[in-house]
Length: 333
Image 1 (tube, rainbow, N blue to C red):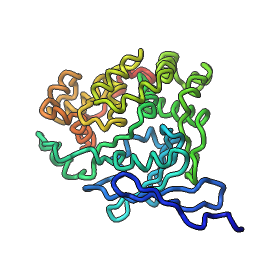
Image 2 (image 1 turned 90 degrees about the vertical axis):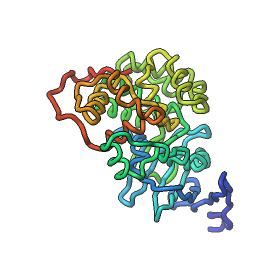
Image 3 (image 1 turned 45 degrees about the vertical axis):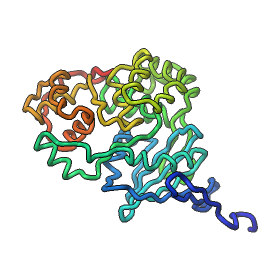
Image 4 (image 1 turned 30 degrees about the horizontal axis):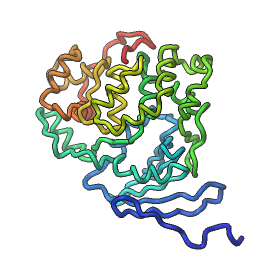
């Protein structure tokens, strides 16, 4: 049995003085995990902060477990990685596995919203103010990864949410790789750019992805390195770079930078439902279009995405009508 476990765990000090230490080798043959303990600067709700990263209840890259932990599988600049994070007494306890483990732990504070400052937000409507008080744990995540938010956003173009979630699930499970470490369930890391580029046309069709969306993803992964560099830009500049790729428009670029950059002002335009929800919540206008929505959100300039998130979290939405569009016919780019 000698030599099975290291006699003395090594430690690594990350930015901010946090210490990362191996968690030990589980009984199954997996690489040792690493840990980080981090104290948020204020209230933090994991579900609110990380929820936008989840693409449906069966997202193969995201899991929540009964103990309150959130598990994510990501393809980082250092390779595949699995992250588990939980809040215990207001402290974030994280573990990570795989080649990308240290990168994920280094990014942990940003992913949990440390660069976001909710205090600068000034509610201009009673509904927004009430929701902000009830949802004090809301912070905007910043993953520092572009493709992992861009590709599922492209899959959501012009289709129902269920169709997009199904496509993401099928493609990641078939062409991705099992998440490193003792991840629960069938957690997978999304495919590498080259793997996306080699997916045969019939596999896209089996996943319900039309040629236009598949072609957009193929064009994006061919310039993956350039797109990932956009994470170092301001959100508006990053959106402009993404929109150079044919098939990526303002809707897709906004949905991406909201997650990759924590962009507080990247309001989503071109959405089928959001203008009506904002219009109804702030002005009683369920038929509002993008121009009306942007006018209503103008008092929140610089924080329009946060305002829209709070409106969605308020639960104030117009009564449902019969579907206006056929399945697979929701227009967004």
